Image (tube, rainbow, N blue to C red; front, side, top):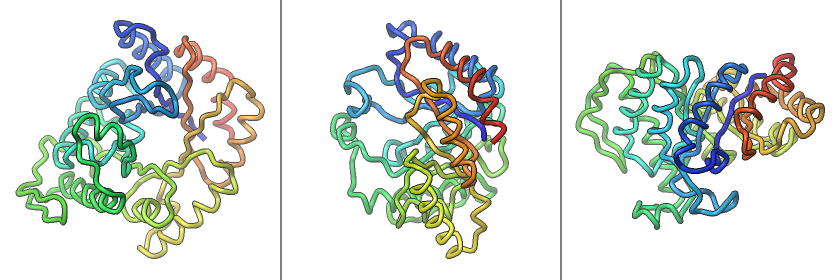
Length: 289
């Protein structure tokens, strides 16, 4: 099992002027420690479930471009992009740009989006849940077309593109790996089966995750896909340093289900130091799972 770093709290770096050097240090430390991936949230306000909504929140793709220049090996992405925040054709070009400038290190996380306050606050249309999933599926289809030799039109229910030109193409053949976040059994996991390279599930316990993976396998059977082609990942709110033995034991149960990556994060003031300790004390044991 490998480990990814998720940065969701920018107050850990102090004043705004300290965010850039602190985040760069955390990213470089993660790379040196052996983390495979670094992700940020795709939010415009901080999540109220986590902290005050007016806490600092950086725009995701601008920040990933900055981090691409600070690192050499880390895969970089958002966990996960909200489908309503950007037009799919423009987002395909944004991801292709990140992939080219990072040397082929872009990861495309995507989800059906949920935060109504951000939409209302910033004037972004917030359609009902069924329409958001329709838009998500059309977006996935548009990306497939834009990251191929077909630069012809796309005609969908919600999106019309006269040309699906994307130059330069991403360095990764077929475009960045697509990760769909969420655990919904009827829609989200069906889209994973049909379009995604990876799923990202919440740390809800091995029994719950086993059930979700069984549902995913059934969706894969329906579309004629081998479920082993889909990388299984989870994100946890647990601090691996709080109880290293307990954390490794919990991850061992997930590894037996085929989970290959766990995302971790922290709001501690010294994020680079925390990352270094996780790399020394936890990551080597995860690699043995």
